[in-house]
Image (cartoon, rainbow, N blue to C red):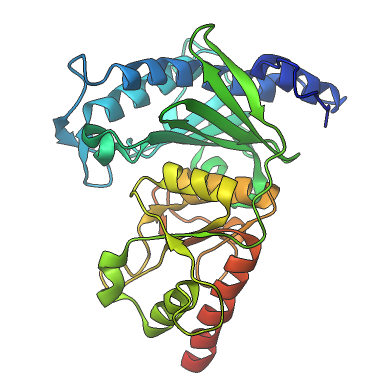
Length: 341
């Protein structure tokens, strides 16, 4: 990785170019995909900042493929990313949490060798109350032979990702990404319209301070999950209590825990035995980021990055964050599996 001094001003474009030079065989296509995502992020950030001033807050009358009421900003973010990416010649297909099927590249545009999977506006149910929201994305190499992207290209295990990242639209707008060589964060300077390197080589603490979990589902958790949460809270006397911080926006909770250390947990429960979060659009990209920052991600039985997807909108339980906190989750949840077996 290219080192920069504390006083150097490094735009995301300069940084990506410098990283690309470290890979002699790079074609530049992946770098360009990251530029295009950064552009889409600027456009979405502009709308998010002005959401209370223009007619873009509130729900629409439509539902997405998940059966959730779509927010106006959901639809805007989804369309913005598609239009920023579909004509570049670098993608062969896309998939969005908001769209039921693969999003093809229009016939009049060239196809590329990558697929993009994305959640255009994670946490959008919090928009009206001014809680930070975000965009999550994952990039895979095409593995099928035809010009167009196919389902097989989308349904690859997370370990095959070549890039992943998220954008958080909060008090400042940050873009955090990895291409497998560490995790780097960039903050948008609105005065010049550029993402500037602000968090080089992010490393998540090995054990964290924060526990992010929705306690309202405790009554539906298995006993081993309840025991795990008691351990995190220090109620069984084996570790210092973690501080509970949960805002219900995955990107916001994950970002805080990335910087301060901790674990985000959305266990399976009797109401959602297969979990709630989307494997391809949320769990996989964040798991790749966590791994590259020294953390880990787990679904209760195996590493998230090892899961073989079978559906475009597959759901999963998720435990993600600091390495030692995930090791604690493995210990508790595997005990229960051994008992059942």
